[in-house]
Length: 400
Image 1 (tube, rainbow, N blue to C red):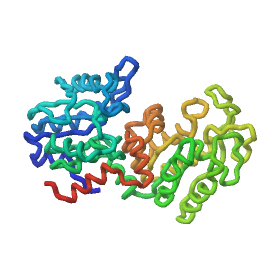
Image 2: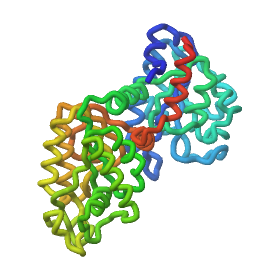
Image 3: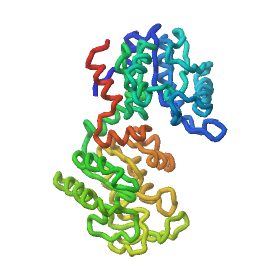
Image 4: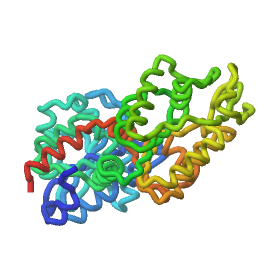
């Protein structure tokens, strides 16, 4: 994917004394008192900001926070706590500027944080009038918020249309590289792991991956539906019987390519869905009518782990069982450890997946961890993200 990168803009000296507008993702969780409870996204934004400052630019940074009503400011919508934390991380005061659309005063070497961009009327619908005003604020627009890359909004798409230069920041560029390595030009065998509760929420992803991967591992409630499609009983487990034809079509599509969707040969069941429920390992053919399947069994987990060790590329989205309950975490834990031990390039994304990676302490063993959430899922669905699309268009116009 050909896009202009901010690192190249800086290297060529184009940022010196220029006004740089950075769209970051500073949408961090806060407690009831407004204190930030987890600052990963703020820390991740620092390299791009520091790059701009070191290049001698006049730097403006903005982000959304929560889901405010456009044109109706409330104290809880403010980026003030973010400005405070950013000041601590950068070792310098970061002023917070409100009502900034009509103009921002900032000098080379200075940095200002622009108040919650989703307060601006027209942001969500990407109004042309707003987009042109945003573009007029800067010489260089830098998109560094992959988590918003699937949304065509004023600060993610519109500004990129009209700014003199539009480019990808280091975080967005890293996502582009990782996605290309895992999906566009993967080393094979390419194995995808897709977990989750419902086939319906991941159906497009499953259909897209079935055309490309060498092995498609399904887990969670999705696996239950595939087991049902394969003629196995699943008791009272979560499944979607109305999607059996779609599940069979995915299995058939994989088979036609000489690939497969492994069906569990053993499972871990319980009579109730609770952390203290008694777990029972049994063959997939022995599931009773009152059983709940809450994990893949150890035999299945070990088979899948062995197959993962032979993969050259692994894409992971979703746990394969209820890993939050210790009695039903073995499947996800085994898969996670197998990925960590594999020499394959691995890319993972999705909230539950990131929680599992953190739980088993394998962050450093992953090739790339995407924090994009919805954007990552849309990439797996085969969609072209608006942010990628507009940056590719701008790159084709040879802005430099």
